[in-house]
Image (tube, rainbow, N blue to C red; front, side, top):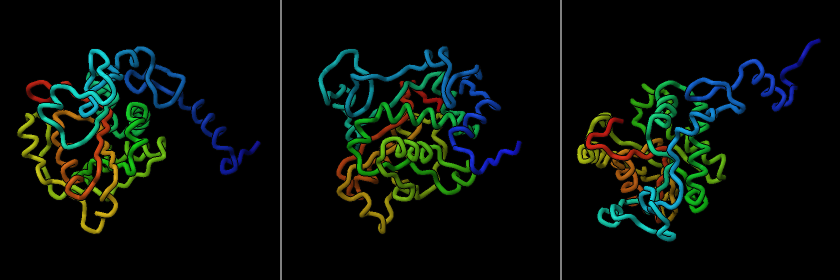
Length: 253
């Protein structure tokens, strides 16, 4: 019997593919029931960030302090964005997923991350007019072949219905890798490294913008991006990442 694949319903085709290539846990490789997912054991190792959290930094509170509550850190050193959320703390299981997307060309890890981010940031996407990824410099993009933040932004847009663009926020100069730098060194490294091109200012001016990245470590890159968006006239800037690093004295990512 001849099967004409071009006329096969998409759901049936996906079912056949799943039979031929069973779904495996993104972390340990054990069989799982759904593609782009974790097994029960690896899921249990994720450190989910649940409400209540600081509205500005997205860091978890020990108890509910009311809607819009701010942490001492946010009050003493306010970030240039208005609100922030992250799906998980950056620990071993989260790191495996981030590295799988960023360095090992595994988009299925990005699909999982984007689902988690859309859930954690559902209030942010509902309030946003536009989703923007943290951009890579063109030479780093050429070397890496894709921007993981743009991949996440695109998928979050598909889930939330909020439009996204990859060309509005650009990186104007090459910067050294942030790995191993402390907070002040990271800030110096990315200072004035981002801008909105003059012919695209209208896309941002007076609008609520959601900035998307994979990991927030010290927040230096997000700060530089948020300042560029403020300069371009954005009315509000929010930040959504998959993982949030609980800062050591010398960040390791």
